[in-house]
Image 1 (tube, helix red, strand yellow):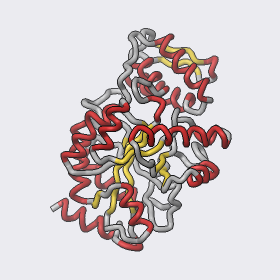
Image 2 (cartoon, rainbow, N blue to C red):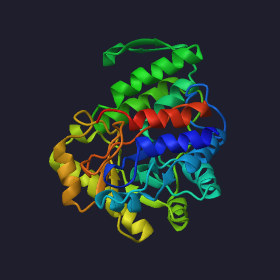
Image 3 (cartoon, helix red, strand yellow):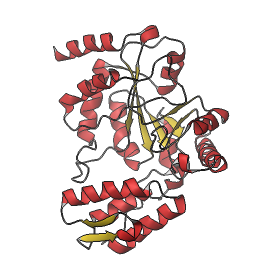
Image 4 (spheres, rainbow, N blue to C red):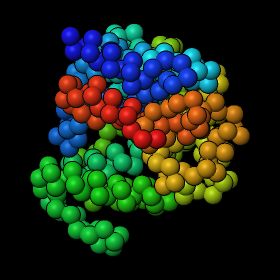
Length: 320
């Protein structure tokens, strides 16, 4: 009964044709078990349940098909796509088998510098605080204060505050900071297998999943000059095209907030480089008047599966 009600509601909120609305979901990781530091991150079980609901209520399309049909006003009602950012190994090891179980397609946007044993700065910071051998960290020299990190809630708060600061540092300073935190705090060596290998990336594509660009080093593009931004975007694309042997069609902005993490000039660069579309992390849905180089996506952060479809409907109703 509830599924029938949801399907009827979805057709009203997101009809087919000219008034169609495309919901593009964004994920980053799919964990084996719940992480106390990130309780809202999806696990294998919750991802499985979410996809079961998504496939019942929505018409889930490959991203390339959805963009083509968005352009031609031929989207079905309740159209949706699935995307992943960054290139975590659990996308291949955990998410891919669940996607295949439900016969669903996804697009994976890859930051190429971290393939084959690399580690993103945020994961270094998370590891340092998760395994900290001290119960506090003094970052007053960086202007962000002293953090108590004894409890799970204190660690979570410290991680969120520190990441919000560090992600906007220049690339070299960002790496120096994350290395410093590892050296200062970490009680054990961080893992070097968080991200996919190039072999896994090839196998992901051979499983009929789309691969998209996400720069080389995951910088805040708005902080780069045009030449630097062009190099990050183009070099990431070129690397991926060499690995998978075909053209990269789509791009996702790192961090992805309009006028904060990227500006219109970066959208222009992406268009000039020949990408067919680009995606932000601004919540909302795409319509036939949407800028193809600033398409919104929605993050379904909930571990309560009964809230999943209502959250997607709320996003569809969001003012654009």
